[in-house]
Image 1 (cartoon, helix red, strand yellow):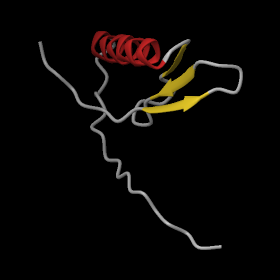
Image 2: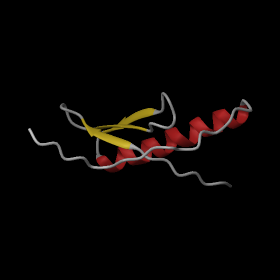
Image 3: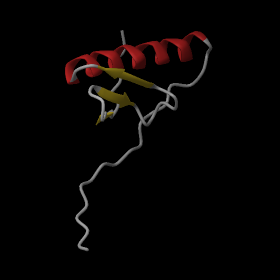
Image 4: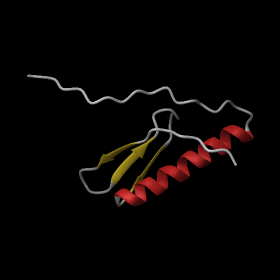
Length: 74
């Protein structure tokens, strides 16, 4: 079993819960009622996404994302 590392983004939703997505995997989104549930759901979504790529003989994306906090004075 091969392991992959991807950056995920979790956004708190206004009505509660979290939206989670993986920028390196277009369309790989999910949600969860709690932070922990959203983490588990995005792990599952990424796993299914990669399994689908493998089964279709497609290339698995390598992440090339830089995340950096940025201060902007206004």
